[in-house]
Image (spheres, rainbow, N blue to C red):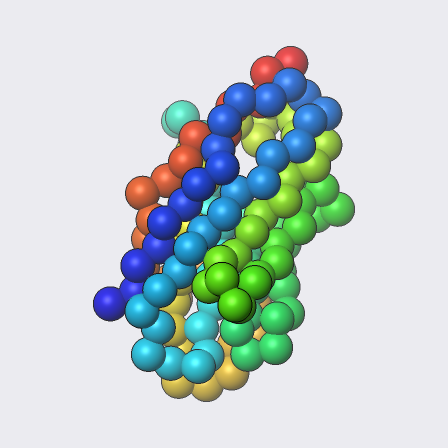
Length: 128
């Protein structure tokens, strides 16, 4: 069973930065994707970014491209989401999620549909 533990949420002013961490354990496949979703009050859940274990390739939603960066430290079984130039519209609960595959993972918008393990979420609040 895959387990995910997020940390690093908090409050920041617009233009500031935060880094979210997701410790991930329990994978049985060498090929999997870990990503971040977010959900703001009254809005649909949005897949923000994901990274492939196959080759470290990444995907970003247009709403965060150029501002957010996802990376992994395999020695620590941890994925990071560096969020820069934060905007009030980035305010949301951020969830780490993961999905295993029986083939190499090429991350894209559909990768989020295959994620079936979830963390509990961490709140990010950006004030103007």
